[in-house]
Image (spheres, rainbow, N blue to C red):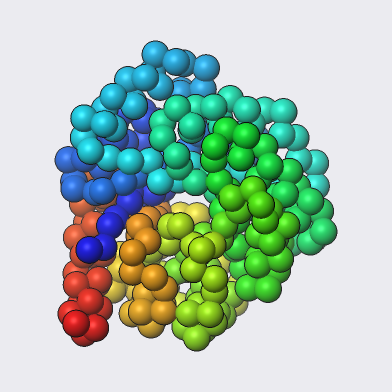
Length: 275
């Protein structure tokens, strides 16, 4: 049976307790949280340094029967300081055994060899907390091709390194279903599910689709059925569908509900064809 996780960007709320409640009420099996700020301007998670809140979240996760599958997100830059990561890793470990997500900075700002070196250090540090790290390749960022991403993951071999694939970025990178099927299954722990408009030619629109403006599964232009048939069906599908165009007109809970309903319809159609 397919399992679904509510990614942070699907229903972004400030309170981790509210995130857990939304995921539980809507009917998700898992969820993801943002603990580590991706950009310097991001607000720190209220969980950091708050053992009481961490314990409350862990109790609520257990009471709701939810598990934390992923924690966002480490941006690998030329200047990459791990000294601030211990608190986020300690918090993640206290909440279960989620996978940490790492992404690379924009192309031209950091070299491939530097990304591999910094990712290896991140994976080694995380392993000391009993955590694994997944590298997420993004087409418009550094290490944003299939081969480059696999090379980054290989640098973390021996420290629980993995690869997390997002349907949007699979499309933008031009990875075929056959290439997906050939990826070592042991590297794949979670898979990001979304739909999106056709690939744009300009960077600004590509970034907007990625961070702010995706579609419900089945309502965009991505060949999701081919991708999902090529990927293992026993990995959690982490629904990551930012829809900032909705503004405040649709509550985070309703967004999460619409995303899960559309995802169920998509996979039921796929699994029915494979039965």
